[in-house]
Length: 261
Length: 251
Image: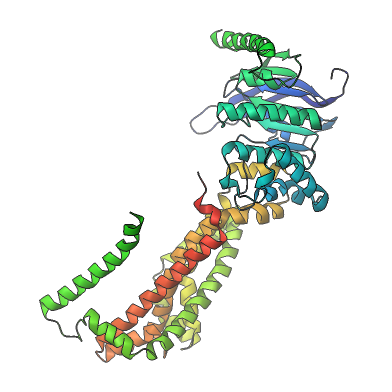
């Protein structure tokens, strides 16, 4: 990965939210700079309120930063891009569409070939173990299954970048672990550049090539830690889990030390 | 328990009939003051070809006005939902229009449009357009924030967002307005018929009042109520058919 080119360049990004009637202006992000390389998996970890979701929305072009800029493949981001997919904390499925129709939503909006991408959509559903649910309605699925559908929707148009905003935060611990493994499998198979926001240190270490640690008020980048462990990683595997736990403990200390200071 | 829940409305209906009958018996009123439920039922049977004929006229006026109100109401709602300027200019006008006692307009409408269906249809629109505009505009503006971000992140055009997300997402709200509107629509048709008509249940009520045929008036009211209830539940059925997901949405 080291030799690969820079895919996302975050350059001195600051975000200030205007003052409301009952609150002073808040500095959500303060001078964040971070490069994410081609096919790299980077996690952003920090407490709630440290601006990590705000940063992700700026990278997605959903929000304009007050200062600084974001470049993707050397081009400044001014709005959402066709080759960038966003996965939200909630599945955000359209309840009036079946599972397969939900997965195909980006294909319709981007005006892509329905035949070709229809096959791809079915392949993706199979990949996440939902091949039997293509015609089901979202409300018939569990939370974990819904988030799998959202993941398929994010992947169907073959984006080069996946931006994920605590996608597993609303799920129970076991489902979370399943999805973490699936995401690693998808990432190894399809090779995407992923920027993944989480408040869970374990999740951050488990998934990432590099973990970017943020501190709140104002949101700053504290440290970037490389995790050089073979994949797929799982907390259950004792051989690797020891190493994972050690890394997690380090980051844990780092986050707590910042708070105490 | 579910069985009992279904029986409850029937039980309440029977209770109301009982009270009605009891009041008449206690005061010893004659039929031209207050007919008994039985007398009304007899009148319904006797007038079994006369009443449906007039009910049909009222039904057509109601439906024409209701459909027109949907067309006008949805158009206004889209304008309000998409333009702050239009919202600021049209909205107060609608509120003012809604505040006018519509009954007061009925004679003027007859003066302008004569004794045909015209003034009735307009009266229906005036009565039921407001809840339709209000609910549709609310629906179009209250797309869930995550769906809003999703559609933006997919680089959708405003038209795509409207067709694929905002309109379907607004449907549950729209149906709230339609269900309020349909009862008002029936009332609008009757008001129109009160003021100047030669047909329709509203006309029958006024005419039988003048002939002191209270029993026939009550029979007409019963048909009117049945009509209104039937239209309401038709909408409920349509809602279940068109938006089955609404009952499953959690938060």
